[in-house]
Length: 469
Picture 1 (cartoon, helix red, strand yellow):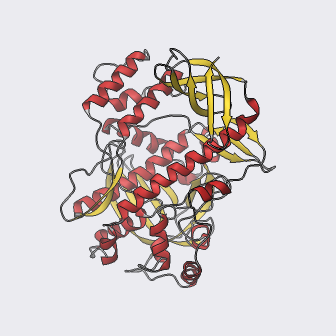
Picture 2 (cartoon, rainbow, N blue to C red):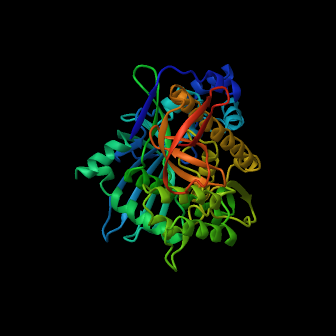
Picture 3 (tube, rainbow, N blue to C red):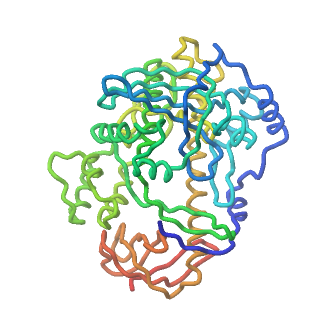
């Protein structure tokens, strides 16, 4: 983990630039407070699952806890996955002030100095959050998986759950590495590996690019962090993907739902990737699929990083596809290698609440609620707009911290990896501090390490200028 500290720094100007809401209206807050005291009754009641020892795995300090997990080994070498998801529908009357505001926001936006939540904190960090030791309404998915990692049965219903522990990724990873995992996730490594192997065989594409993050320091400053993804991150994500794929299957079979979709890359894009690999001196064994080829690369190697950066063009065109009756032409997600839906993060993402209600109704043999069917016409556009805004806000925050960090180092030299190169410029990853930027120079070697010099910092435009040293 690489940290570079910068003192001070306020993100208020970014909130104003993107017109982010500062608070919730009094009608929204009043409805949320009332829902805490008197949640909506669920059709068919709730199963009491408070005896299941769920745990949560989230970033350190998280309070908006969407998911709690318990994985059991069963006879025959298979697994039973219990996945409890926060039940926001228990607190949000359809068509009310909370519902309208959530549709306007679309998702929670995360800024270094505090998030812009989808729902009021009294719900998102309180009554709806799966906090440890608290009994909470949840949507409980139980998915039976065979010894090869394939799901064999799915059951989804409303329940009451109680998480027993709140963990972060590094804590769980450390306990697994030490051979002393919590019993509720002791089977996570085995199941996670199986699911990852299946994903590669399905053709799933995972780009293992380094992630830039912003972290707050105790003295009030900000730090740029390059945090490598550990195994628990990947395994935990596979449990969410397993659930999302089960949800997609339910909706497709019922002929009503909303899916996360991505078209397959065309032959020209794959041929272009092959030429990029050849230019980077990366061998692509004959007969290996894109997924198998990329999964075998070492993400820590400069050439691999450059190829992963190039591969992003294979994953363009993601969207949300709603249907009610005839199935759409596209029902799959190329990055996942199958049909998939968002159902595991309803505290933080709007679409999950609607998709979940469809799965619950279909599984119980009930009609899908009318308010859900009506919403299907609007939810894809609402989510696309919020995804676009979230990406812009995240990039602006990182750009802002980058210029704060680098402002005192004009003229300094740094080591960098060339990710994408053109004739006289390239996209680079400065390794310490972890900064993504543009660099000028002749014949910049894609996929190799070079020395670069910081020539200018434009704080107003949040832009850095580098040249080859």
